[in-house]
Image 1 (tube, helix red, strand yellow):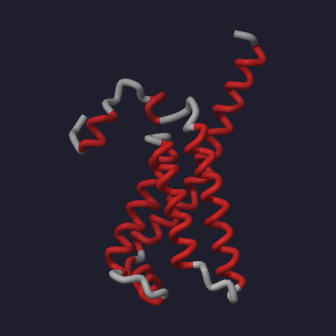
Image 2: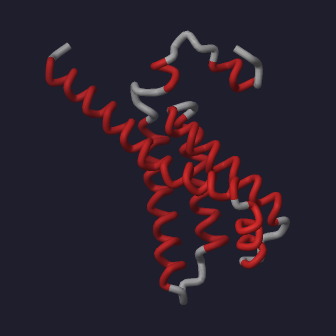
Image 3: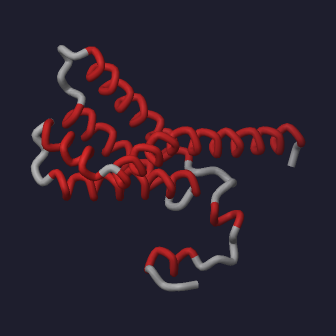
Length: 149
């Protein structure tokens, strides 16, 4: 293997890790916020007309916190990225489509832009630096099934 190819691979893997970390940060932060402030979250969901705000909050915590952590760790990154891209579009339409409001327009475009970033992750994968790569002997399949190590 040529040295330029090795450097190129290293740079790409670091870029993929950095991209995953940056893309996941907002989701981890937001999901955690919904977890620790259930009343505020449910009140907001009710105010924008979402049915079943309690259920919507639980789903949002699962997708945002769970998906954000999975993406950060590189666990099923392509699948998680697709799910988060869809989530971004759905939440843009459900919660940020009042285009008369400048803040809503910005939030809508932020969600659309993030969906584009997730499509890149879905297309190119997590890269070499993932939890599976760091802990290859850990039985990740058991974690997915809820079994102990």
